Image 1 (spheres, helix red, strand yellow):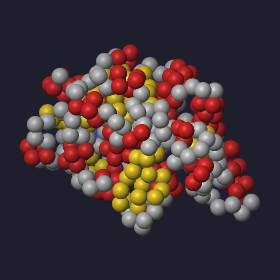
Image 2 (cartoon, protein in one colour):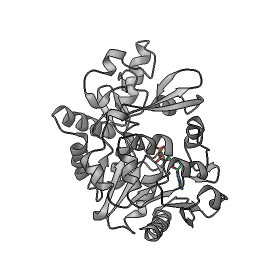
Image 3 (cartoon, rainbow, N blue to C red):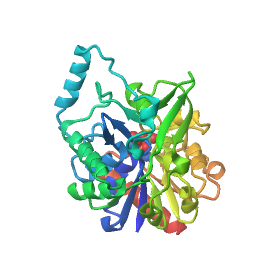
Image 4 (tube, helix red, strand yellow):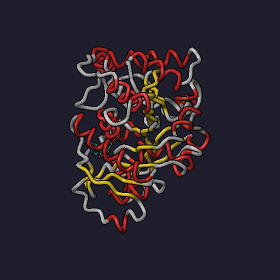
Length: 336
Ligand code: GDP
C-alpha cells in the first residue's frame, strides 16, 4: 500500500505513471482542498478534480485543469451578461456574514457567480453541480469524491484531505488578504506574498480515511509545498502521522528553478528558501528525497540524514512518470 499527497499539477503528473510501479488497488491519493472555492453556489475542488479527470482519461493536459475539449457556453454567457449589465467581472466575494453561513465546507471562500472569474467548462460544471447537490443531500465530501471517482472509473482511492473547511488565503505585501484563487487565477501571481494562511485548519480534521492512508508509506509528489501540501500539514495530527511512516518527497525544483507555477514566490513569502533545500526544510519528516539529475543542491548540507535518489524528474509523459515513480519506490525501499 502507498499513499500519494497531491496538489493539482506535479503529483497528478507523477500519478500518470505511478500505477505501472505501484498496483492501482494499493494506491490512495490524498488531495489538497485548501484551493477549493464556492462559486455561484457550487463547490469547486480544483486539485481533487485534476486527479479525478486525469484518472478518468478526460483531463485537459495543456492546462492541467478542466476537461479536454470542453465547451464554455455558460461561462461565456455569464461574462457577456455581466458586461451588458455593467457589473464588474470580479472576483466578487460574498459579504462577511455570508462567508460564515450556509454550507459549512465553503466557509471563507465564497464568491458570487456573477461573471464567474474562474473559467468553468460546461461538462466540468456538471461535476460541481453533482458534488454540491450531494453535499446538500447530506453526504460528506469524502463520500461524494468516491461516488464521482466511480463515475470516472478511477482505479486509485481518491480522498479529500478533510471534510472540514480550510481556505488558503494569501496576505499580500500591500496589506490585502485574498483567496489563493484570486492571487493565482485572477492576478496571475503578481502580488508580492507576505504570508499564507490556512484559515480553519486548526479546527479541521483529517478524515478517518486519510488517517488510515497515512499509516502506509507516503509519496509527496513534486507539488507546491506551500499551497498544495501546506494545507494538509496545517491539519492537526497530519505531520505527526507523517513522522511515524516512511516518507519520500519529489522535489518540484531543480536547485532554485521551478518547473511551473508560483511555488518559488510562495516559499519566499513564508520564509522558506525557494529551492530544493527549502523543500527539505518544509518537510522535516521526510526520510528520502528524489532530486533531478541536474539538481546542484549540496545534499550533505541541505539534506543531512535524508536518503537521496537521483533521476530525471521532468515529467512530460507516462514513461517519465514511471521513471520518477520507480525512483520513489527505490527510495521507499531504502528507508522502510
Ligand atoms: P498546483 O495546484 O498547480 O500548484 O499543483 P502542484 O502543487 O501539484 O504542482 C506544482 C508544482 O509542480 C510546481 O512547483 C512545479 O515545479 C512542479 N512540477 C510541474 N511539472 C513538473 C515536472 O515535470 N517535474 C517536477 N519534478 N516537478 C514539476
